[in-house]
Length: 249
Length: 384
Image (cartoon, rainbow over all chains, first blue to last red; front, side, top):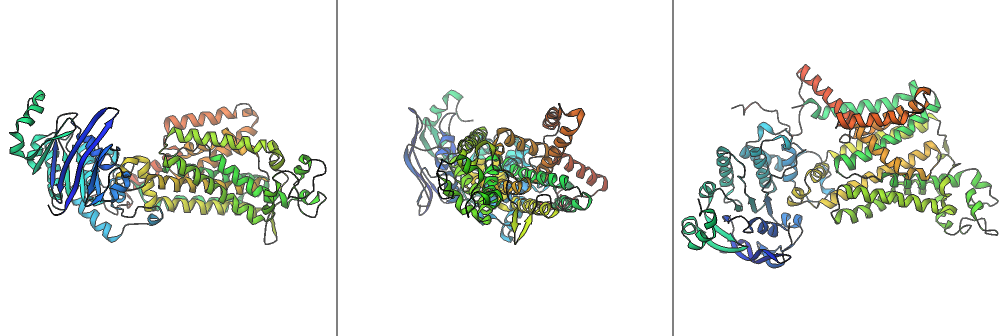
């Protein structure tokens, strides 16, 4: 564990007495693909909100590649190399697919540095690869708001790739997808493995089996278990937590 | 790929518009109407400012009259001091006539101290100072205002309410400062803009050209600005500010920048209006005027700079014609209201929307498709 990508230490948030995330800790290695599981209300999405700066934590720290990013502004955390995909696809609906990618691939942050026209050669090369990977060339000049649900999810994934984040957080990337679409998504995520550190929150167990290496199970805002798929499935604590919903399917 | 997405269509449309306003004096030799059109071109510039902030940044500013008014007053102060009457008040230095009426008995007839605070007028003795301030003051004020609003992530209708309240507040202060501003009466009886010894009588064709050329330049620069990467990022913050933040952009910076550019255009428009209309009045900061600007932009098409500009010119022309037609003298306001309602109901993209659809229709008929921003032709290879 020479260079962990993300160290989460005792992360907590208190919503007026309700602790949605309560002393959650884990270490995610560089290049790892981590799946976070947990029943509804376990605090998975809140945990992502805390890491990305969307919600301010009330305790604990988040360290990314040795840099403390706890409670920094969203755009600062993003610039430090963290990208996030939302549960409900979040794309720029009135821009074309290409323009969405164009915004995402922009390295320069400020207004004045961006008073320029056209694409740089390096940007163009990167976008060509992403369009290939996400298979969006058919819809490249379409308004993003006119895409199908699956295409919109891939567009958002593509934007994260264009952004070139070292760490990518994916919140239920296959929500609402057909089987075929889910399969394609797992292929895209597999293609990212190795170049990016990826954290996925997901309910779809078939999908999890397809991609998972190491799994973290959350329950009531805390870490319940961590390990490989087969270990997790046979963990009695995990089975207890899921008992209401009949165990992991 | 729709033809209207092609950049060449835009170049053509902007080119046609600019050619039309530049050639207009050749066919219209009535100085009264030319002066009138010049004022409408200024309103067209306001349409551009509104479209930039409302259409492209998603910021509805209901107080654009604030910046227009400030721009107008700044240059009007200079032109007031240049006027013949200001030089005839029994002093060797210019003093505005209304200050004498408002001065206490025995006050020295000098800008330094004729009424409390009148020293503020002193630098305006230089015409260039008033002209520069017409843009600088709106920029400074809008920058401070926008920084406060957008750093706190105020958005949507709240921005509209704040700006609306501010323009009314400014109007109140302006009227209240009667000895300094001539209050409700505004600044009238102004001198003419004088550049290199040439006086620009508002009814001269040359004055029309100052305004027409200014509008052309503003229109082209604003159009170029929104097609830069920064302009694209701005539009992304309008669609989904959260996504923009998570891509690493400080959304407030973009909003502040474009809000300020919009205010600068409005201030510049205020300056040009005074040159053409020879007065500045608190009515520039009336609520109805600021809301009218938004209506012009909505009718023309707020997501098109040129559309909003043409909308402003068209509505004002219709308004003038209707209010002077005997039949419509009583009802012309209803005519304007009706146009607005129809546009909102049936043409959400305004007149610009009709233009785009027409172009697309021609494109389909003629089998022409433009070249898009992506530079890709959709799509020969992936027809699997």
